[in-house]
Each structure stands twice: as structure tokens, then as C-alpha cells.
Image (tube, rainbow, N blue to C red; front, side):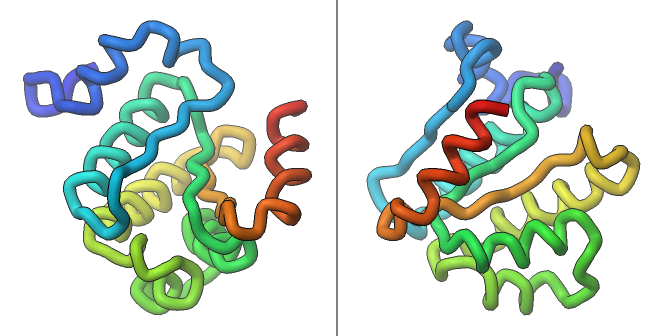
Length: 142
């Protein structure tokens, strides 16, 4: 699948790593927080993974309960303005335009999907791993 008639960086990444299509977990990090180019690439990569049918869940390094509020917005269970939801539910490093664009895309994507086909965002803060570990383990066993 190509956007705008040419391969994007995210599409090229998927095509160069054949294991991506069968991976249970795809981890994408960055060398520094709040770098717009990293966030944009990760957002584009996630969109392409969803479009290719590879994943439906995005995990980010942010508080689980805060990101649950963001996921409610993505699932249209929360009618607050996006900027308010992001300020309440995301760590500052995630509060940029590229994340706002991704969350809007996720919400729009979900608008025509039944529950089992919707995309979600989940927070897993490594500083709070004792709380996140059982949730990630439960996800991996499903």
C-alpha cells in the first residue's frame, strides 16, 4: 500500500523487515524524547502497520490511567476537546502535533469499525512497570 504514489519512510521500514508481519511485539524507541521527527516516523509507522493488518494497539511510554482517558477519546467515549485530553492523559513528550494528528486518525479510523476491529492506545510507563507488567502479559496471552 503506498501513500501519495510513492513509498513513505514507514512503508519502506515495513518492506525491509519481513519479520514485522508476523511479530507479536514491535518496539520502536528513540534516542531522545520530544523530537518531532521521531514521533512523526513512529506515528506513520503505526498507521502503516494498521493498514497492513499487522497491529491494532499502540503502546506508549506514558501513564496507564492517563492514556486510558486518551483511548476513551479515540473510541469516541469522551467528547472533550483533543488538546484537553492530551494535556490530562499524556506525558508532555507526547503532546505535539504529530501525536494529535495520529490520535485524530485513530478516532476517524474507529468511526467505521466494530469494536473488535478498532485501534487502541495504551500507556505503559516503564517507571511503573509493576503495574504495567500484568496488563502487557494479559495482552500477549490473548
